[in-house]
Image (cartoon, rainbow, N blue to C red; front, side, top):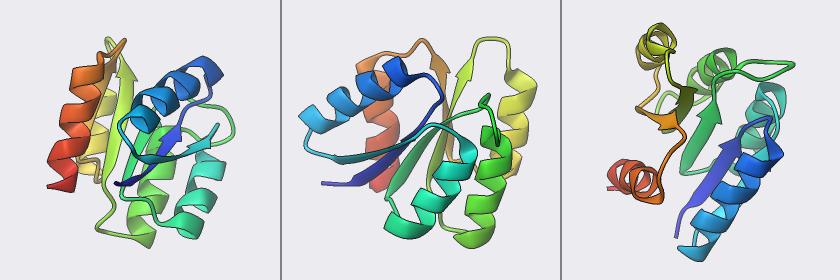
Length: 118
Protein backbone atom coordinates (compact mmCIF):
# COMPACT_ATOMS: atom_id res chain seq x y z
CA UNK A 1 0.00 0.00 0.00
CA UNK A 2 0.99 3.66 0.30
CA UNK A 3 3.39 5.54 2.58
CA UNK A 4 1.36 8.23 4.33
CA UNK A 5 2.72 11.05 6.50
CA UNK A 6 0.34 12.45 9.11
CA UNK A 7 1.21 15.92 10.39
CA UNK A 8 -0.73 17.34 13.32
CA UNK A 9 0.22 18.77 16.70
CA UNK A 10 -2.70 16.91 18.32
CA UNK A 11 -1.44 13.46 19.31
CA UNK A 12 -4.96 12.02 19.57
CA UNK A 13 -5.62 12.94 15.94
CA UNK A 14 -2.35 11.39 14.75
CA UNK A 15 -3.19 8.21 16.70
CA UNK A 16 -6.70 8.11 15.24
CA UNK A 17 -5.47 8.53 11.67
CA UNK A 18 -2.61 6.07 12.18
CA UNK A 19 -5.04 3.40 13.37
CA UNK A 20 -7.47 4.17 10.56
CA UNK A 21 -4.84 4.04 7.81
CA UNK A 22 -2.83 1.20 9.33
CA UNK A 23 -5.95 -0.96 9.40
CA UNK A 24 -6.29 -0.34 5.67
CA UNK A 25 -2.71 -1.58 5.14
CA UNK A 26 -0.86 1.72 4.67
CA UNK A 27 2.57 2.46 6.13
CA UNK A 28 2.01 5.47 8.37
CA UNK A 29 4.56 8.01 9.60
CA UNK A 30 3.91 10.91 11.98
CA UNK A 31 5.19 14.43 12.58
CA UNK A 32 3.89 16.85 15.19
CA UNK A 33 4.76 20.11 13.40
CA UNK A 34 5.74 21.55 10.05
CA UNK A 35 9.48 21.48 10.70
CA UNK A 36 9.42 17.74 11.35
CA UNK A 37 7.03 17.25 8.43
CA UNK A 38 9.48 18.79 5.96
CA UNK A 39 12.40 16.77 7.34
CA UNK A 40 10.39 13.53 7.35
CA UNK A 41 9.10 14.19 3.83
CA UNK A 42 12.64 14.57 2.51
CA UNK A 43 13.69 11.39 4.29
CA UNK A 44 10.87 8.99 3.37
CA UNK A 45 9.23 10.54 0.27
CA UNK A 46 5.66 9.60 1.25
CA UNK A 47 2.96 9.00 -1.34
CA UNK A 48 0.46 11.24 0.49
CA UNK A 49 0.68 13.80 3.31
CA UNK A 50 -2.27 14.66 5.58
CA UNK A 51 -1.33 17.97 7.23
CA UNK A 52 -2.98 20.24 9.76
CA UNK A 53 -2.94 23.95 9.06
CA UNK A 54 -2.40 25.32 12.57
CA UNK A 55 0.67 23.98 14.39
CA UNK A 56 3.55 25.33 16.50
CA UNK A 57 7.12 25.82 15.20
CA UNK A 58 6.03 25.82 11.54
CA UNK A 59 2.42 25.98 10.37
CA UNK A 60 0.97 23.73 7.71
CA UNK A 61 0.92 26.35 4.95
CA UNK A 62 4.61 27.11 5.37
CA UNK A 63 5.43 23.40 5.48
CA UNK A 64 3.28 22.82 2.38
CA UNK A 65 5.20 25.48 0.47
CA UNK A 66 8.55 23.99 1.50
CA UNK A 67 7.48 20.46 0.58
CA UNK A 68 6.13 21.57 -2.82
CA UNK A 69 9.32 23.55 -3.54
CA UNK A 70 11.30 20.36 -2.78
CA UNK A 71 8.90 18.09 -4.68
CA UNK A 72 6.43 19.82 -7.05
CA UNK A 73 4.56 16.52 -7.45
CA UNK A 74 3.90 16.21 -3.70
CA UNK A 75 0.38 15.05 -2.85
CA UNK A 76 -0.68 17.00 0.23
CA UNK A 77 -4.15 17.06 1.78
CA UNK A 78 -4.73 19.86 4.28
CA UNK A 79 -6.71 19.20 7.45
CA UNK A 80 -8.66 22.31 8.44
CA UNK A 81 -11.14 23.39 11.06
CA UNK A 82 -14.49 24.86 10.10
CA UNK A 83 -14.28 28.53 9.18
CA UNK A 84 -10.83 28.43 7.58
CA UNK A 85 -12.01 28.91 4.00
CA UNK A 86 -9.42 31.61 3.20
CA UNK A 87 -6.67 29.32 4.48
CA UNK A 88 -7.97 26.48 2.31
CA UNK A 89 -7.90 28.75 -0.74
CA UNK A 90 -4.30 29.76 -0.02
CA UNK A 91 -3.35 26.11 0.53
CA UNK A 92 -4.81 25.08 -2.83
CA UNK A 93 -2.98 27.96 -4.55
CA UNK A 94 0.21 26.80 -2.81
CA UNK A 95 -0.06 23.24 -4.07
CA UNK A 96 -2.42 21.31 -1.79
CA UNK A 97 -4.32 18.69 -3.77
CA UNK A 98 -7.34 18.47 -1.44
CA UNK A 99 -8.59 19.49 1.97
CA UNK A 100 -10.57 17.76 4.69
CA UNK A 101 -12.60 19.65 7.28
CA UNK A 102 -12.29 18.49 10.89
CA UNK A 103 -13.93 16.62 12.43
CA UNK A 104 -13.73 14.12 9.59
CA UNK A 105 -15.15 10.72 8.81
CA UNK A 106 -13.20 7.63 7.78
CA UNK A 107 -14.84 7.56 4.35
CA UNK A 108 -13.84 11.15 3.56
CA UNK A 109 -10.20 10.49 4.44
CA UNK A 110 -10.08 7.28 2.43
CA UNK A 111 -11.77 8.93 -0.56
CA UNK A 112 -9.14 11.70 -0.60
CA UNK A 113 -6.26 9.21 -0.36
CA UNK A 114 -7.71 6.91 -3.01
CA UNK A 115 -8.19 9.84 -5.38
CA UNK A 116 -4.58 10.98 -4.98
CA UNK A 117 -3.14 7.49 -5.41
CA UNK A 118 -5.14 6.80 -8.59
